[in-house]
Image (cartoon, rainbow over all chains, first blue to last red; front, top):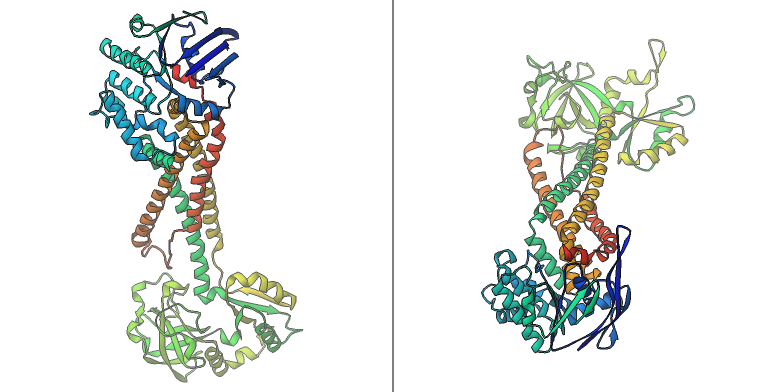
Length: 222
Length: 402
């Protein structure tokens, strides 16, 4: 698995001012690696992860997944890539409050019509069990702690077995114990062959990531 | 199917949907009820005109110098929708029921000519079997008095239920000679404009009686030096056919006029008001559905953004949104229908019982239901199609950054 970024630039306008969020970035992310992208607020970390995740439009350059250009694909094709190749983990978890834990995990599986409801449920319950939440699967997000909610979000990100995990400050709202648990999990995922790209402020991430990258004024460097 | 199941689950778990359903079902209930009530009122009037022959009875004037009465009668008989034709002798005659004279009644009443099935009977027989016999169909509350009026106490009327089938002596047109008449049927006096002083017999019988007891009155065309011509009469099968018939009749020099007119002015005012109210309700409901959907989209923006991050396309998101909208509409419609059935039953059984003179049947109008169903289904469909663009342009990154 390989994500290649070629001369990636992203600008946007704010109050008649043009902001250069990403400035001519080129980099290759590969599987079996845990990348930590660090940098101060506004350096462009989240923008980069959103561009890699095909949520944000790029201004210049190219993103290739296994040598296939994906940034120029149609919105439907991009959605398919997100559904099958990419798993997102967010700082604020973004669980659906009206769905139980296992139902939140099931959400990405609705996109695959070949999976029936029994398999969907058993697969999500298995993932929750692997993340230590077997007793919390029937609970709604508001009934779970922050750490538990993030583990549900991780399960949701993993349920379609994506090759890339994009985590945008996933430990930002967690205590140190839960932070360690999440980082350990992400490290394990990378060890199992996935390409984990995580954006973070926290220095503790350096102990888990095997590649540390820094963003500064829209530029990426090691 | 998966989408539908998910939409159904989201619908059940979203408390805001209860409010949405209640609001929408109230409006749909009012629309269905409004249309049903309007239609029932129209049916009521149609029913009334067709049940009671008085509304289907017309007098015809013509140029007496050019057409004789016999010619006019013959002509009339051949027109479509004309079920009975007769001259003025068949219209009515005054009788005195000697057996019913007491302190409160002088026994005088009218005998009107009626078609064989023109009266809504509550008991007994109609005139079909008695084409030219001395039989009477009397009101259930009989008021044989020359001063009978609406102001009279209804309790003074004679309950005729026990007189059904009996024979009574009558003197006719003030003559001494008496004839025996049998009471063969009773009609509901609430079902006519009479105040209980009108009985019915066949046209032929009335005609025969007039010929026998006051022939001169009809044959002389001058009374006290003034030339008098009597019109002829006909009964039509359905008042709806009058307009077409009138054109044909006027071409032949025959000019029909209602004998009894329905107060259509008050009726049409009520219908007009109801129509305006229903149209306003339609617009309010459409606006309401639009507002509800826009509000729901606002509430669901974050959820749709997350779904997009998970790999849902704008179309899938729109479909989820649409399914939930349709479920809200369907549930609201079913609730509205249930409320209508429930309340119309209550209104029929309690409120309208005895409140109106005639039998008013409030029934659910299925066209109204269909219209309510259409707006509850099609408006969300159209709105969702329009909103597909909005959904595809949800600022995902901005929402996820919040």
